Structures are given as structure tokens and as C-alpha cells.
Image 1 (cartoon, rainbow, N blue to C red):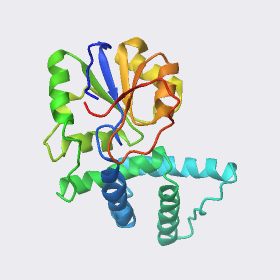
Image 2 (cartoon, helix red, strand yellow):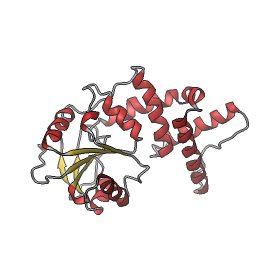
Image 3 (tube, helix red, strand yellow):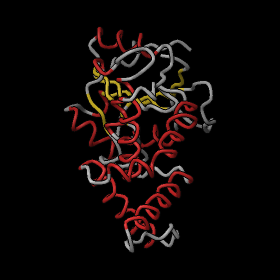
Image 4 (cartoon, rainbow, N blue to C red):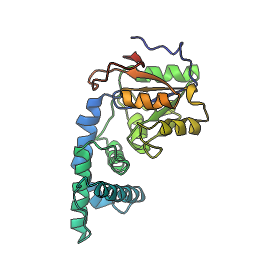
Amino acid sequence: MAFSLSSENPSAILLDIEGTTTPIAFVYDELFPFARARVRDYLEHHCGEPDVTEALARLRREHQEDEALDLRPPALTDKSKGDRLDSLVAYVYWLMDRDRKSTGLKALQGCIWWRGYLDGELRSKVFSDVPRAFARWREAGYRISIFSSGSKLAQELLFRYTESGDLTRFIDSYFDTTIGPKSAPKSYQLIAAALGLEPAAILFISDTVTELEAARRARMRTWLCVRPGNHPQPSDHEHHVITSF
């Protein structure tokens, strides 16, 4: 179905990344394995840097929450530097294996990817219609923002280092789960407030019905994006469906 904003005419467009602007396969087959293969070495050499220290502090708080919920995460230890590092890596792997939308994990992954992009080891992928749509939307005066479970750093890196060039010039704002879960209506209310807009003036586009339902409960307008490789979604929804931008 062709993408048209004529019936909506929003002031801003809020976009998910995975399965909306970017193939799911790039995230799961390239980004996640890249971070997993390098996490121990990265922590060994960068654990004292401010962004990494903050990510590890978040991970430790999340670990305490997991223990309180009796989820049985791998134990963290401070017996020695090596043991501490091994236990942190084990917990990171445990979160990755469960595809947890952990804020600490996403922050750490963003740091690792940043080094990969700078070193030329990573180049991100977006669907072919995305660069053209971004340029068209900007020319039409629409504000473009991103809301993803990946950290703000990871989001900006993904759009800066694409195979189609730097797309960050089209994007006004980035939001991650520090503002709240993507399944919570309150998160979308806070995003609208941060943008200085009423929720009804924002069109949220995502590949996941649960996220769209949360945004709709916050009074945003919503469209479901169906792309090749996306996970099947429930059919009993009322969101307009698009297959391209």
C-alpha cells in the first residue's frame, strides 16, 4: 500500500526502528552478534569511561531487580577484577539470550557499536524508501523523531552511518527507554510533552501492535508498518497498515 500522509497531516512523525526503518535481520544478524562477540574485550579496556560506568551501574540495578523477582540471573561477584568482569559478561549474555529491552544492556551495546562504526567495521542498513521519505517529509515541514528500545547513542549511530549516507540531518529528536517502556501509554505522553505537541498531532509508525496500542491510548495516531522479515502481528487491530514509506 502506498504511503500517504494526506489523511493524517500530523505535525510530527514518530518512528520505531527495527522492522520499520531498518530490517530486523540487520539488528539480529549483525548488530547483536557484533556486540556479543566484543563485550568482554570492550569492558576490559573501557570500563572506566563515564558512559560505560553509567551503563554498568544500570545493569547492576537491573540485576538486583531480577533477583528480587526470582528470575535467577547469573550471580555478580566482586572477588577479583577477572571474576567481576566474567560475571558481568555472563549477565549481559543472559539478558541478550532473552532479548531483554534492558536499558543498561542497550546503553552498553551502543558504546560497543560506536567503536565499530568509527573503526569502519559496521555500516547500518535502512530500507531503500527511507532516505527518500525523510527528505520528502522534511521538505513538507514534518518533524521526524525516533523512539526505540536501543539507546539514543545507538539510534543516532545507526542513522549516521547508513549505507545510504548520513540521515541524522533529517531527525529532530531521539527517545529511548529512559523515558519509559514502549508498551506504556505514559511514555508516549512524555514524548509528546518533550516535543511540545499534543499527542493527537503525532503519527507513530511501528511494526508492533502492542506499541501502537500504547501510543493510541496516549491519543497519538498510529500506523502499522509491515516489512519483509517482520514478526507476524495480531490481525484483530484497527491500525492503518503500510508496507512502505
